[in-house]
Image 1 (tube, one colour):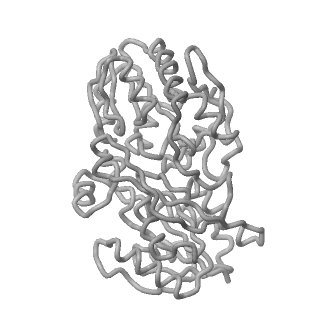
Image 2: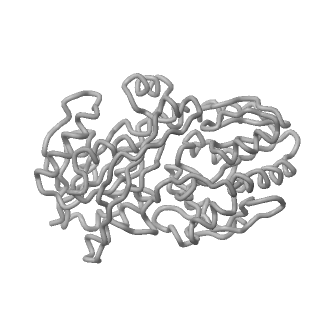
Image 3: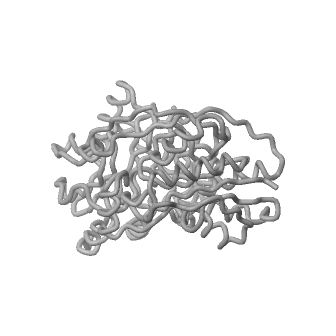
Length: 386
């Protein structure tokens, strides 16, 4: 039997769709829930475990009781061994650390955890490089290199273990940012430790990296091209990132940098909005709508990392063909052929986004580049959307 340890941080990622840019701290969690945020980590863990239900007779899942693991595992029919329970309700950081210690004491082969960078930090404090782990990406800010690119990709990695394939493990960095500074538009990322994770360059998320001075010049060129393409009476939803910020600055506008802003006729009509606010604006606007996003350096995600305000409901309303991607050529080249990625928390929608899409990379310069997702990362599932 493969002894799989499971840890779910039930409240990871709550702040994303409601524009809070993280969920660190009890006050932020309460605010997120008050704004109507819904849990996402349990469902994302379920998607990963669902990928290995065919191997259920070979897996024993060790976990904490209730929403920290047992509820999801038992609902999918897995044999479970309860090694403890949360001491706090709602669960706290101490519960995550206690679960990691209990799973290591039980001698699990791998700890699979659903959370964000804050969760990874806690597990790194306990496990370090003494225990193989794998993250199911469920947070808002995802800078660490210890996560699969999607829940399904995590399931693919588990299948490699279960089918006897040789899986290399390697040390990968855990990074996190200061959320309070992040909400003020400042990115202060720090290295916090190292975890031992299955190494798969196609299925494992890369550590987020910063751009170069040359990239900054290319951002200006790409921004000018995008500005030339703007259409009157079209609602533009502008995702976060330094590249999209340059675009707004070239229009003489001051956006939120790390939030989602809305543009109409070259004027900002809303800044740092939530998914609910975006839907309300879409209800009010009767004309065409488009979404502008950029790629995360090193990782390649264009949806699902730091821009969860672009919820599946918002994306479906705007339409998959109305997504504009802008990224400096150097950022695309740094992917080394790996596709851009989508992880919208809706697998059907993720599949619909797959295909070759134009990416604005410089002045009057675009490239046609593949977009993939999860388990079909590297395989373009549908090239019908140019």
